[in-house]
Image (cartoon, each protein chain N blue to C red):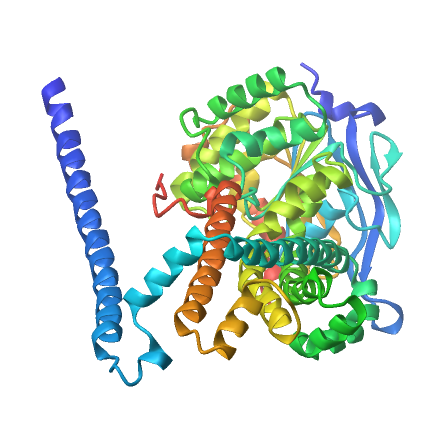
Amino acid sequence: MTAVDVKPNANFAHESIRAHRRRANRNLAIYVSRFAILVAILATWQFGVSDASLPYFSRPTLIAGRLAELLSGETIYRHIYVTLTEIVLGYVLGALIGLVLGFVLGRSPFLSSVLQPYIMALYSIPKIALAPVFIVWLGLGIASKVAVVLLSSFFLVFFNTYSGLLGVNEEFVRLARLMGASWTHTIGRVVLPAAAPQIFIGLKTAVPYAVIGAVIGEYIGANEGLGFFILYASQTYDVPSLFSGIILLVCIVFVVNVGLTRIERRFMHWRNLGPQTLTF
Amino acid sequence: MLNKNDFSGPSDVALAFRDVSLNFGQGIKSVPAIDRVNFDVLNGKVTTVVGPSGCGKTTLLRLAAGMVPASGGEVLHDGARVNGLNTRVGFVTQDSNLFPWLTALQNVEFPLIARGVPKDERRERAHRWLKLVGLTGFENHYPSQLSGGMQKRVSIVRTLIYEPNVVLFDEPFGALDAQTRMTLHHELLELWKQKNSTMLFITHDLVEAITLSDQIIIMTRRPGRVKQIYQVPLARPRNVFEIYLEPGFDEAYSALWEHFKSEIVPG
């Protein structure tokens, strides 16, 4: 009798192993294809650039060499440090203000009506256009870039937090209150988690804008930072350094995004549970 | 033997609706939703409100929970006027409304955390209640991983676990298939018997009303008024799976339908 009971289970397990293998194969194919595209691009670049156009386009091997050289030196770390500081300070401040303001306006229709024209006016100004203003006010140092980064990242976090809060199912709030939850408990345990997916969209999309803010700020007026480094390389026709700077910027965005995705997964594992709905 | 119900003094009344009216909108545009409603919800009994859609049944529950203030009259809970959110009632909504970011266990624990029950005790209670509805083994599942019937069970347990004085049900079983609904009727009556709870149940399904209730309030079309209060003559315990065979069912159904049909058949 036990044998009869076990058999369908064994089949089922077999089936799931097969499905697992199929999925693994597909993932492998995706990674191989991605890598192939990268190789193709690099090869075209490496062998497609003529000696005459070399000063303009450089070559992957030359850039890799320059990058290694830079990373074994000291000055580049100072540039990375400055840009990272601007990004982190500006982003954290901008995100915090965006979160708080989005939260307050999301829960207060009155305040959001009052402030709406001002926020829209500020939003409609290209943040880059304000960079020269900040340089006049705050000087060529870090502070003016922090201000640009702050403003660039603020809006995305603010709008997403705000709309996340408006999207919270009011029935959840009423039920939580009826079940005896205090306002702080309701905000922390119901409103925030309910709005979290949208808030994280804001936090993640703001990262590249923060980086853009820092770099553009440095383009406009600075004496250190990766943006300054790239601009200087461009003005001296040092193309390998130019590309090295850009690669370092991409790395920064990548690392920050991986970090944020980790945090997001921790908070929102409930959203990626997969289709295993039970039916009975 | 005397039926306690026949001598219902004030202490037997959990919720009392006294001339309760509610208007939607203000001034000239004001539309009456319910109009001078009077009835009592008795302690330890199941009272059901039936009525055509749009007659303000759900509004009655919202009034009892203090989610909306009455335009006229008052709702008394144990003799005290309901004024502001009434946290002594439990509310089981039409949709399960489980928090999707919490597991079944965490959902059920939510009201206990909110009410400051110590961790060990609330763990133990949550496990015990989930077991009562056959959800042992699903404690760590998220709502999206549960079937509709299971979600409904968690939703009911989440409300019953803190033993509210009166439990309000807003057509909770409407979206379920017939078999699941019968099973849940059975489980609900078992819980009711064990916990001796007081329930106010809203439905538009006469069979469901007969299956569950001691007393049925029949409402008119909008503006909702109490048309008739009907005492269900069926003995308990009832076999919910074959409720049609219970003695008195046919008579109860005919009597209810007689009142009900004029409210849903136009003209």
